[in-house]
Every structure is written in structure tokens, then in C-alpha cells.
Amino acid sequence: MAVDLVADIGNTRAKVGVFQGDDLLDKVEVENGDPEALRRALDTLCAGWIPRRAGLAQVSPEPAEVFAEWVKDKLKLEVARLGESLPCPVPLEIDEPAGVGPDRQANAVWAARTYPARSVIVIDLGTAITFDVVAARGAFVGGAIAPGLRLQARAMHEHTARLPQVSLGEADPSPLGRTTEECLQAGIFWSTVGLIDTLCAQIAHQLEEDPLVVATGGDAKRIAARCPCVAQVVSDLTLRGVRLALDSA
Image (cartoon, rainbow, N blue to C red; front, side):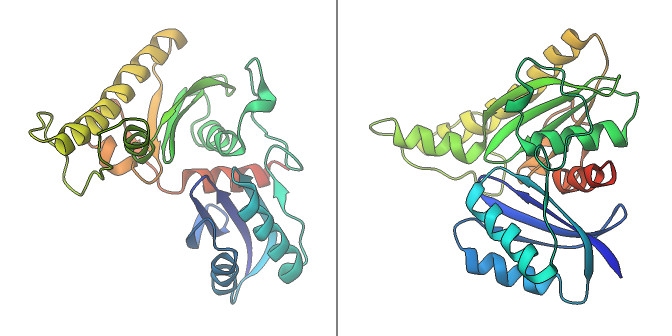
């Protein structure tokens, strides 16, 4: 069965999926920093498939090179890199288009192709929180970038004298912390909720449109459940955007 092999290699994790058309058949996720683990995961993922194309949205360079080398060695294919050998099929109508990361380009492709003639805000909640905005005319028009939840927690610990490192746990924290740890958890979690609702409202006002707000990324389900502005949570949205970009090549 002919399929497409698509990778989204972010700051923290490498995600690789096998697609047949729009259908994600299987995927693996590997923490960055262990090249052998990524190679083993690729061996397992591609057993039984015959990829005809390979696409990549690259943020972290080292695991991206491991992926590209594996594809060339095992599949005899050259990886199409979004923003490089694979041009972004969505117009980047901003002041510095060369500075738009491939992951954000992939999010814009997904939005423009999935919701033509509709403005969309894609919020990617990972190591960073990115807001990628596509206007109704189908162009990427900008957005915003903020630190993700774990990055906030680490920064508060590393750049203060007394604040501890915290994790957010499974349950939503009370907005009224009664210990230092609870205060940190409340500030990180609820400020992120407020950031999303406020910034989306401001973006909509500036666009003079009513954008559809879609969340993706590792923290999407949890945060989106508390954000009235978020209409959908879409898993593997960036992978899906890379695959759609392959179809435009």
C-alpha cells in the first residue's frame, strides 16, 4: 500500500506519521536527544508500508537530520522540507516571511485547506504556545508566540531565588493557591487560559472577522476545555498540514 511518511520535529519531540490520503494510519512519538530511539521507531512504523513521499516540518535540526538520513538510506527518498525544498503553498503576508517556522507554516496550510474562505486561528500548545492566523482570503497574516506551560514553570524556578520547580499534575489547579507550589500552578495554568481567550478576542477585533479557533499540541485538550473561544481540538494538526503541503508540490 502506497503511503506518505510525514514528520513534525519540534523543540521537544519528534512525531512521525504514516498517511493514506487524509487518513493517519499510524504514528510514533519520540523524545528528542536519542537518535537510536528515533531510528528504531521509524523501523517499526514503516514495517509493511511503502512510502512514496516523505515530508518534514523541522524545528529541531539534529533529529530532523536523523529522520532525513533514515529516509534516504532505508526508503531511497529525499525528504521534502516545508519552507525549503517544499515551498509553503499558503501566502505568507507578513513583514518577515523567511522567519516563519515550518511548523507554523504547516498549521497555516492545514487551516487554509481545511477551512477555505474562513479565517482560522490555530493555537499550538507545546514547548511554546503559538497563535497562527489565516485570514478568510487564505493567507497567513501573523500571530503570536508565548511560553508553554512547562517552559513557564522552568523559567520561574531557574530565574528566581526561592520558587520551586512545579508540575501541573492531572487536575486543574485552584485559582486560589494556598502554598507556594499551588500559587505557581494557579498562575501558570489560569494565565494561559486568560492569554488564549484575550488574545483571540484581540486578533478577531483586528482582523474584523470571526475566526474559527482550533487548538492542537500536547496541552491542547486540557487548556481548551477551559477556553470558551476554542471551537475544536485537532490532534496531529501539524503533521496533517505537512501532508497537505505535499499535495500542493
